[in-house]
Length: 156
Image (cartoon, rainbow, N blue to C red):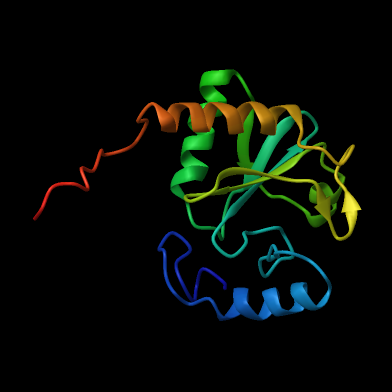
């Protein structure tokens, strides 16, 4: 959806574009889909942001995407771990040729991508930056990072 139609900074429930693209992806044997913006640049997927290692640095789309919480915390992790990451334009060809690719979601954290359009990314295994960020993300989450403890045993 162009930002003139729906502000991408707002989490909304207008998912028709995602749903229609998912049907096409499923018909092609894929598990999910990444949409392009109106200019043909990589944007986001249904419920996730995307990062790619392009030329030694992590790149995630700069505009037309929800500024997701896990996307933000990934930038924080990168800063803490000394991994270069930036927002920029991401071309579909760059995504297909990336050294590694991962998704960020609230529920899934950092999720490696090893195949795009039926072709392996690099050697077909999660890349070292992805593995490092994934491990650090879940280590910190287990320690209570950005969490509010809930005592489910208490009655209201």
